[in-house]
Length: 413
Image (cartoon, rainbow, N blue to C red):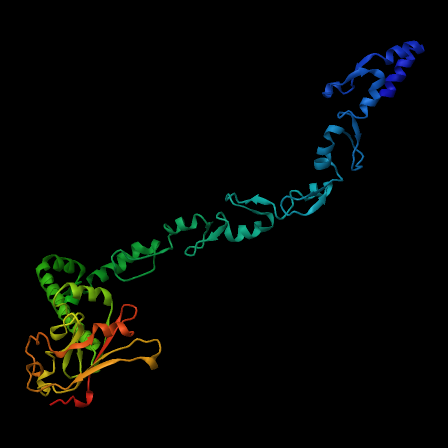
């Protein structure tokens, strides 16, 4: 462009002096309209064009296009046929022309479902979506066989003429097609209504049977009778429950002749015993055998009688049992108390054991009345408080005491 302008000037002004004057004149860049603000002597225009950002030069990737310097980066990045770029969906690299062909065909590109269900899926999964997941795909009604879109087939089922419905007369028929319900009611409901139906209170003892109309009248007129039947049924069930509870309680009672009594929260119970007079702990009741004597242990942590405030006292009580009439009286079997040493080494444990043979003349060992003896018989000075501190009789705030009756001396009548 610059050579062309200079050649035109030489033809118009062949005089060298004139040419010199013209070359020194001030001109604007030929790309002034594109935004270049350069202006200087004409002789400097060529040098400026070598750096002017608006002047066109060959593509740096040699695609053959003439591109203004200011647009070269965008050309190389977006429009040059020889550019290298990655697909934003599958991330594979392509040349510029190949990328343009790939775009619009990439299997990983998200596209909207062609059924216009609103879902967006990868192009490669569109057929699977249309066949299995699309809410607008056609599916047949399982009753009538007509095809509906997936999102409307359920609503169709609520009115489908072939959908099975229950008889409103509760005749027992199931699966009556909706379109045939009127005929069913006409042909079968009358016969069902005439059948003898049992009273809904039959489990309570009502024996009435009749037609549906008669049954409704009976229910309305027999409220007092039904209430009495239900009340009687509830009473019978309450007695059965009491009997079952008693049977379970009997099964859960210890009948081995030996009780291992676990006394927990020992420190708190000892503190209470020292603050209050007569604090007594009683064990669960146990039997010497399945049909034997009923016994219960009694414990005074701070002592009782001769052991008060210095020893722990222990006693045995004979309670009224279910089989006392079959047993020999007075009670005459050896009773032993064992306080366990909870040493971590069983070989080094030193348990405390005390036992006695009942005196048959003592009242404590006679057949008990409804109210057992208040204290029982035992050892008021079973073990001293000092001894309790010397070994591991109390561990983790728990103490174990065994009460045992010699089973070889249990003799029933």
